[in-house]
Length: 111
Length: 116
Image 1 (cartoon, rainbow over the protein chains, first blue to last red):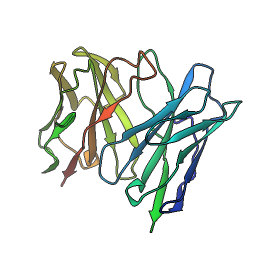
Image 2 (image 1 turned 45 degrees about the horizontal axis):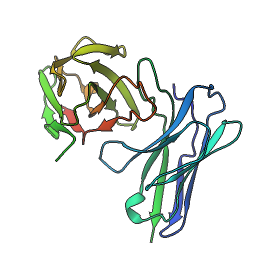
Image 3 (image 1 turned 180 degrees about the vertical axis):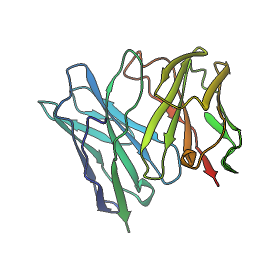
Image 4 (image 1 turned 90 degrees about the vertical axis):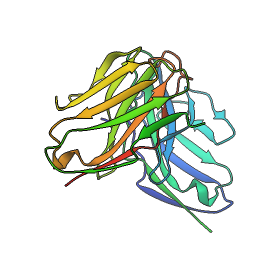
């Protein structure tokens, strides 16, 4: 089972920041937080990951709380093409590697 | 160039038939995966292969048999198709067995299987 909980859906106006929350209260010390997204009918796409520090790349920023029990994915300037299902995944990066997807958050960006 | 490709994109077949889905990656990765996304959009791992060796088999029925002829290919053969096999099947690859946090998985475009 997925170790994360996310809101089912969110809306965001185009050009505004989209903040997608994720709870992972049972995360252990050596587990990373990963974010993937799935645009309609396409394969999941990696966005970003982090352990305990905030991370930023060309796609998004990841803010992880100090106790690591929750995190927020930030899309700074959402576009219509960011409309997708966003998955927050807790991953143990060594040993057998498998991504356990939850239900994700369906983000709808509107004009 | 497409990193992870799958064929066919759509597959419609009758119950009881046998069918195969092919996957190829040109990323030079050692590990490949099959995931299934059902009608409720749950995405779940089925198999993983590392260097042509089966690593993960997530209690998938024996009717499903993955085959990895080489590191760049992982095919999925399904015998005696059932209605419940209708789903989108995604292939993915990663450099290794998650040996590094930066070892992310790259997914193919999916194969939509419909069993009538």
